[in-house]
Image (tube, rainbow, N blue to C red):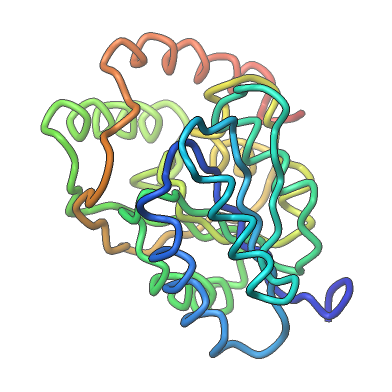
Length: 234
């Protein structure tokens, strides 16, 4: 058993997700309550300017210490939010997913099952049937093809936030600059960790809008080269 009886730590970066948070936590709780061992859920608030932080505080008060708030002091981006949650996590296994409900918490069970079957360090979601705009899906697919071509990785969707990984692997993940979170599986693979994947259920966006812009593709290419040059290390 991990620290303080917590076997699993769920990390969710949050930026203006007031409409989805209660639904998301309800789905996470339904899945995690069926697993042996305790769990914690970190909602990392990245300076939301809606009511997200008030909702997280209420969920924390209502759920006996299971829900934990990390409130970043300034707008820092998803990479920093994930790093803060991973560093605070005490579970033997750390699970990450987006707050917008497109990742399905029900897939957590399949991530954990695959981790046991393959005896691997990380399992990623593969959004085979993506529910995104045509441009976003095509640019992501292009990026994944190029990464498989240049790295030899067999993972089809390394930028999917839905992931489960062992704590010791999490401590080796390089998250030094904004955007580096997209390369977490590559970072671990380059360091010799075993990475597997499952086909995940990618759902329609119910609330809000995508924070992804097509101009980001150029930044992603530069970041990929930086990760490769550092061989995935911190």
